Amino acid sequence: MTKVLIATDKPFAKVAVDGIRKITEAAGFELVLLEKYTAQSDFVNAVADVDAVIIRSDIADKEVIAAAKNLKIIVRAGAGYDNIDLSACTAHNVVAMNTPGQNSNAVAELAFGMMLMAARNNFDGSSGTELRGKKLGIHAYGNVGKYVALIAKGFGMDIYAYDPFVAKADMEKDGVKCLTSVEELYTVCQYVSLHIPANDKTKKSVNFELLSKMPKNACLVNTARKEVIDEEGLLKTFAERADFKYVSDIEPACKAEIAGNYANRFFFTPKKMGAQTSEANVNAGLAAAQQIVDFIKKGDKTYQVNK
Ligand code: 3PG
Image (cartoon, rainbow, N blue to C red; front, side, top):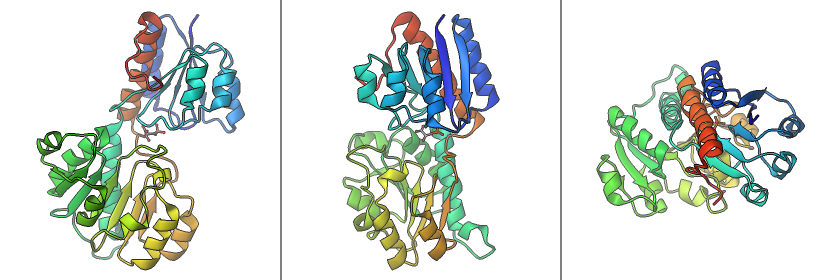
């Protein structure tokens, strides 16, 4: 019998697990669960006899892939797949997929939650500012970026985006002004919301040079990955600009230094929370389950990322 493992250090909402069970069992598959595991070795041991795996930000490294002798498919229920060793998957003939777009609204809503916290001085009782009329720069206009633009319209923000892979016309039809360089985005926009993936080109790319270009009362919003930030440059920006704020869905490595010196100019979630809503869990989890069924039964490789 085809065995499917859900391996989630940060578990899905129960309603999502129930939905995944329904889809996999209707296909005649067995579903097993590994949740809130404390050691990576638990994950390695759990994959020994499974045919398919659903993960979130769980680390599917070389060791996991090599230990999964029957593995045919691994699906990252979410957008970013920087946590999967794609070469190891390809070498072991394992198809790796993500579920693009399924948790994007949840991430975009958190970006606004954190933006409001920054604008209202972390709700410390002092007089803050409003988002209306402020310039928002969307750094990468993919699935999350589009939802950010949609919500920003409701807030009455002046919306800009930079994404070399998206046509100007596609941004303009959403009421977004298309900028042609990343430098321009940081120069123009008081708020910049990051939606770039973490890869060799983007890691540490948000650096002092870019941050120092931002207008007065700058606020960087990171619901992407902490790895895209050059933390040395981030600390330098905090030190040189008393008007700079940073809100991030996951703590940077230099959290203690920021917290110790720049109180009320930051907010960090303790665990990545962007996609942690039952709606996003259901959307991404059920999509992952369906993609596994469609691949095992029909060979459907839509959404494969290790081509
Ligand atoms: C993603 O890449 O989809 C988001 O970062 C969500 O990650 P999570 O599933 O670990 O919450």
